[in-house]
Length: 208
Image (tube, rainbow, N blue to C red; front, side, top):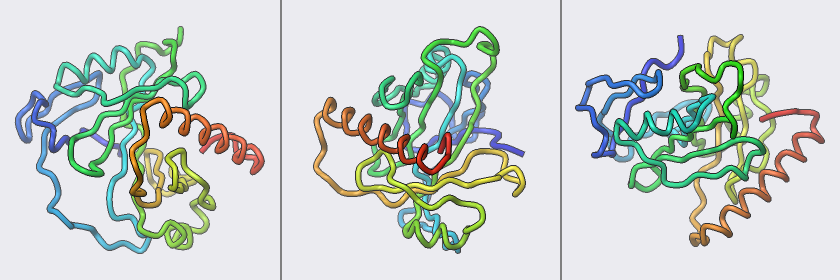
């Protein structure tokens, strides 16, 4: 089975009490307690934390409004990094707290535009991405540069054959750097996204 609900911690404005289910455009939402500080599960694949969760929608404005109704508001948004795609990013104030990334087409499709949103994918932080790839050599691609400067990423292949119902990815740890002005950061992400797309094309891969 897939994800059944989205647990939110560290977001006091979320309008449902702990353990109580609410609904946001088809996604069940509940508040939960954050993990203990320093609680990092050991695993052979190296994954130790959640980096971000991807919510996919055919109508990003509708889903944005539904998330706002339960107290979630984006920190930033862009329609430039991925061609034809709008991305909105939600995050609690904690340092390196997981991100909720809402993605959808810039224009609502004529067919399927009324479908609800869905929890589509998870990306985990790996302390050693090469170790992660070595632990899953037949099921991950060789890591490549991520859109975020200084980080790398790999994705799980053939997840359905492994009984995994959503997209999974692994990223190297966050890089401490001086914050860039918003416009410069956006330009960096766009530049890195185009380089990433070109690299995948050279490898004969149409997508991440």
